[in-house]
Length: 300
View 1: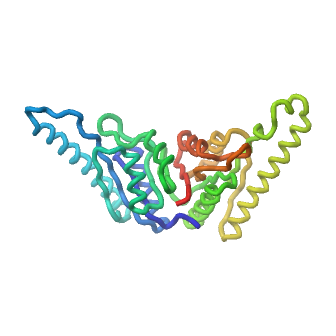
View 2 (view 1 turned 135 degrees about the vertical axis):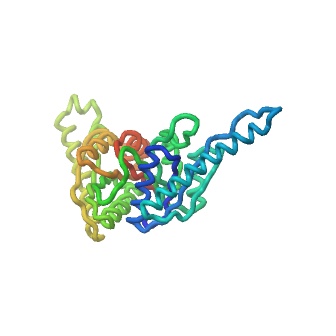
View 3 (view 1 turned 90 degrees about the horizontal axis):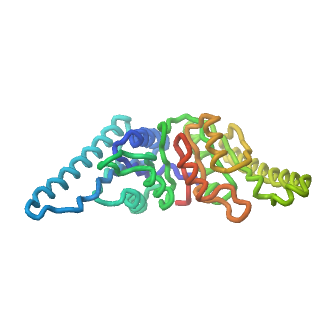
């Protein structure tokens, strides 16, 4: 089943990409009937305390908390200005933002974490590339990382699949999202042809190597057709299917650019063994390389 409607936890620090994430959160919440929660994490406490002037230390703490509260209040105000209601706002101080986001999402029963790919520089920075990477790897639920542009529906959604369990959940989620928002749904499976044929056969038995590649590609096409057929049987619509050969993350990112997709969706882990095409490292790479928003789906 799809993850929507759900509780969305927006992790924000008020940076430019966090603002894109806020716009995306508002659009997604209103499009899917989801409940929206907001988190802002303030900087770590100073490592020093002036022995003869403890009031200075207390003043620094108060200033940091006040600035963080201002950021949180501004983000809540923006979201309400977009026409959505914030169910709850959370302020945390002096903790690792990635750990706070993951732990809070689990505690609050969130079905999706949404955040920008990079945050503010300097002393006030709380969300940055390494943080979004960490949240994607450790979250118990799907994560939407926003970069470049906000998610705005209707749009083109590119679903990447390899037939694994998480890819199946991503398929259901992407199909439901496309249907409920009037978006186009494109489905791609990347065929890593070199993984099926040993270089020795390429050199000494080129015809046999080509036959193995054709058979493997046919098998992958059948899987892709089956997924598209399943979506259509469930009342969804698939605009187009795509088969690509090469490195999975690179091909997914390139196709997203060719299609001008507004959202890429894929599972967090793929098939094991020599036949795998999408796996944890691929979803990580897509999040890092994509020019637009990426939804990484895992079982809730």
